[in-house]
Length: 241
Image (tube, rainbow, N blue to C red):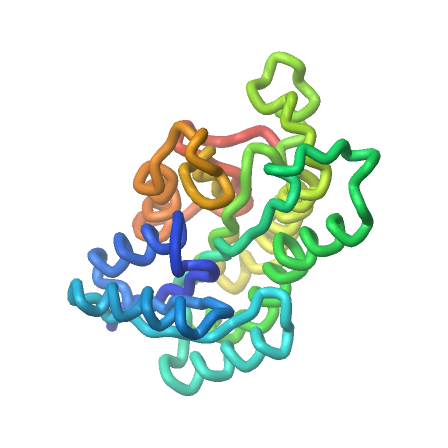
């Protein structure tokens, strides 16, 4: 039986590259997106290349949408083997807003997508993951969520003082640690993965890495025979929390 992967935010960028690559690994690919037109276009492109791909409408910021998506998948596919929480936002990158001047709304909006939305997806998809037998949850995080990195003046990312984005990824990492312990008895691994600074709409053209390079570690974690759990990883191995 084919494995099924659900990827949020997979209409472009890293998520779309992961979808393309996992289709080549014979996964049934479920693309989650808020915009129906963009989602269907991404699926049609995958299908033209022979992929078994399907569009699932899902708004990360709307729990009722997430619940309905899970119900739709349950009826059509019955399980999810790999859940990739890729959707994310960064409202500070272009503005350069100082942490002390950040609006409460910006902080809330960032957490709604990057943290609360991820938790809601996991919560409602959990029955689907349990049906897979030995499932995997991959949370796309960032080294900017590492307090060790951000507090070290010698670290490359020390100067990236984006309070909302950074703290939302730190919270996401805490979610990974907590759920890895909680879901171990259900044989569901949970890991945070950093794709690096990648040329995407969020990362901009200044980024040194391609989407192919950024997607590689996610694909590796989705396809490897064994899976660790409760880890924070990038291409070079473990990242300090």
